[in-house]
Image 1 (tube, rainbow, N blue to C red):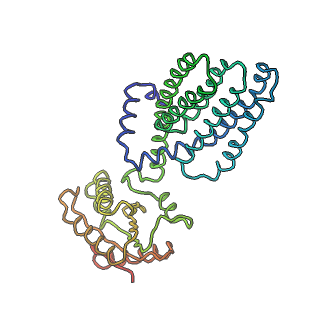
Image 2 (cartoon, rainbow, N blue to C red):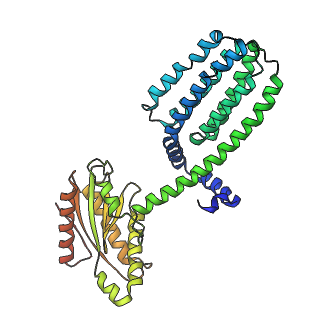
Image 3 (spheres, rainbow, N blue to C red):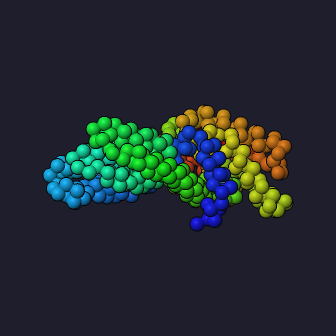
Length: 361
């Protein structure tokens, strides 16, 4: 584990970074968090329900019989069965969080119902500790707001049940449970930050796996994912553009490879900033780049790439004076064919003077 996790300033930095996340990114983090831990939540909640049912033995020791509390305890099997049935069918992470907490409260309500039939109700305090253990487990796959609201219901259920259970030790009950709730909520914050740290690391590794190290645009791994038959990354109408830096070998020979690398980074960054967020820029190999424009007609794509071509040739920020050539084709659902046509158009542009765009009709 990175020792920075144990550093207070690093933890505060994680807090700041999480707050600065856009709603979409924060939503993605919470979805990742819930999906990752849901299997463990299922096991933990199932175990909590079975533990509550096994309290029939302690009921026997207190009452001398299990009959009065048999139905309240076994009633927990109904929500547990429904939870297990719907658990694998729910895809919305917010609904998953809700069902997790609902089952936790079912454990509490069945316990309150069972306590109603017990002669000695002082042991209910010990029973509530089980709920805190379950709540602590839920911290792994919940948001702080979920845990906070869940605890409001927790104390409301205790206070309401006092009207008919008449807890003789209500003050002690609350005095024990309130600090436990604060401890669990604090654990919620820490566990969320730890998971957030893991999330950032995983997303960084995923990004590096599909990103060209030099130019920071997509690589061939990303291209394979985009063009996979099962993928829906390309939205028609779409256009494929093969882009090549004119006389790039001369740049390396005259200015050196460091300048050549800077030219590649300049082109990649320029093209990436010139297209939309939903478009793709891929370093195809060497000085060649593949640009995929989604929801874009051939006419619009031609205007876009010509604008980029002219701007690059005149940009004073370019490391050295350069021009580009491009070949364009329409994507009709067959990537290999569209790539072949764009590549042929590129070679036509290079063989006819360079610094131009050729569209394969």
